[in-house]
Image 1: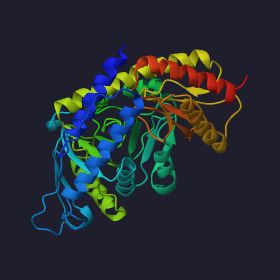
Image 2: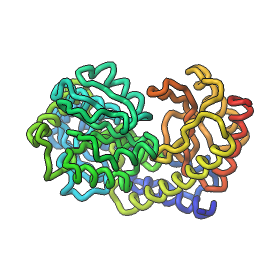
Image 3: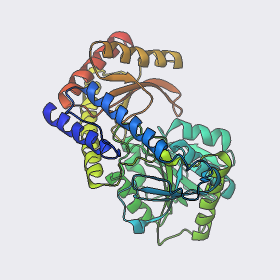
Length: 423
């Protein structure tokens, strides 16, 4: 267990890394409170974004200045009008050998990445079946159901899927499903997939889970595309900027129904969808502090802290909130969802998320009402599971000293029993 002193030493390292990217670094003292960490970190990232705007004043949407050489830290950019042809040179957010990456396309957000890819897929593979597991990201399922109706969406556990031959079967593998379902998928041998789309947002870029899926896809000879939002886990908990990506993994195998040429066509259609939807990435949103050994080390330590805290909260809520409908074992370990013995509706879930964060923060706990995860504070938000049509409250586990998180977890459990899920 990391001591509080060691925690603040580590936070100082994170702040120093951010500060080192400024042309005129600010004076930094060791933080002495979690609030101090949060304030300084978000102030530094704001200063970095402002410095980028001042530095790149002549690299506008059209890159009109011939001398403009837009960059953000280790990333260099080339583009024409509105970045529809954006080319990016720089480090990968994944801990993968460059030889394993066929191509990467950056987008304005994680949702822009998955939306552009799925719309391209619906054009290239009309009538294809998209298989998704319970707990998959709700907005992705909503997108397919409402705007990619040329695709047939099937949601269920692996054992429930038919082994019948279909024209094209795509696995939509999401990093926010339950641990059991994730294990069932990567150990499944009976189903044939023609393509795997893997949303890695809830795994760190160096996660063994990502490597596990890559190895599995190669064993099965199935093409693999990674999609990701970089705003959550890739910016040291500071939400540096909205940024997403689509990465085609190189493979020596190709199914008979999706040869290499079809994958190239799919990626070309994806680029076209990005252009037509205005989904191109903004150079200013690329974190200038990524790619170094210090960044990778600090990110690994952040994730280790969050996962350790997440395991404690899952165990505690399983005992303290016994009988309360909850999702305590997502494969990523970054957040849990708490329900009620009497089902919540959207309004009640929204109110509970806001009230919990407000009341617990008033007594000094680092908890905020925020719709994301991976912070240095706990975050609460309402949550709707489309596969079960149930509402709950999502509690994102923070990178906090374990002793403080233990106290906050206990306070959350007590508050939930007293205020929401009464016996």
